[in-house]
Image (cartoon, rainbow, N blue to C red; front, top):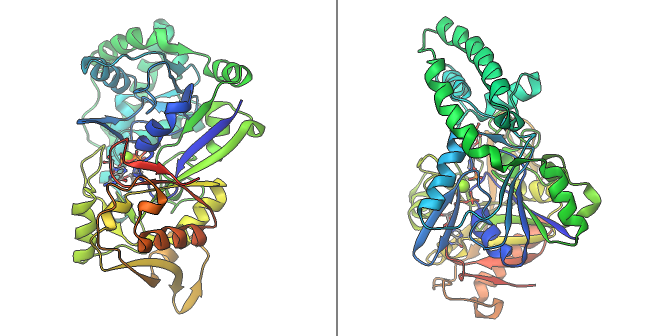
Length: 423
Ligand code: GDP
Ligand code: IMO
Ligand code: MG
């Protein structure tokens, strides 16, 4: 019966894909519950490197059902290509279900995303340009098109054409290229036919699995600091990335939830614009980027890097209710002599441990840094807590104390086997 949720506790790219793959060893169903193909979840198995955008990261475990829940915005052409790409690498797609209630992303959403970004000047968000914001906006405006219509091509065509024409007027007003609606429809029709057999009422199937005593794991995308309510608004994504989003985005009632896994990088990264109090602009930031290979899995953009921000992560763990921390990328800190942790914010002379709501306040934060000694040896081969150098254990213990949670898993490299449980 238990349902566990796994979420990112920072600005995304904490290593959620890897952790889902690891935890799925003992899971029957993995459910994505929000976001879209803005996500890039990396799983490394042996020498194989996979990046998933919409397909849940449980796909590499035979027999695991992978569900794309009602809370997502799904680019049907992107999903078709992703599924074909996985199959082309010789993997069995197994059972993939797509919620009939999920919203669809079309080419016009991507163009509207790009239009908004290019006209926004200093208010640019640095989105992935996958059409996420416009698709969620259409959902809230109640003019979105849902995945159920992939199974009803006539209705899909009529709705798509009507919406595309509205967007074309907008594009013409802004002097940008309009869509060739016939050509777009031809692509969409093919994707609809490919995906239709996967569309079903996942709320019933997930709840039936829970009732049958199966283990269900909900896979978050992005991270708490990109959450539409709790993140660094407006420099956020357009969905609820926090654990609460799993209930609405998968159709699971709160009393079924057991553990909330918070994936937390041993330092901090961010892609795109927006405040980042511990960002490093010197060679330490560059070292984190190079050693941690911090380049976006979806867009290839270099990730901004900085010290672990305990103020932001503590807020995230509180809202998420994280009772199990999975700390990733500890190995990236191996060579450092000293490691910084931000324990408080100095905002115009006032010191606080609370994460401010206003982005403009966050952007003038001076981080209060506590220094911890580095361990200066490799952790990549550690497979138990005791095999970690004492200073690394002290660092992890301090992270856990500051965010008021417990370290349950430590990850010391990108591969499946470079992970161990602490509790
Ligand atoms: P996600 O979006 O949260 O799934 O994270 P990404 O896949 O975008 O980024 C995490 C990156 O770190 C990927 O390239 C992973 O292969 C890699 N990774 C995950 N865990 C570890 C780790 O413990 N150590 C190192 N060095 N790399 C890791
Ligand atoms: P995973 O699941 C990191 C960021 C974008 C941008 C902001 C809004 O791999 O952790 P959007 O395209 O969602 O409208 O962009 O959110 N962003 C991510 N950053 N990891 C992600 O996903 C992200 N998904 C979106 O860079 O700043
Ligand atoms: Mg990612």
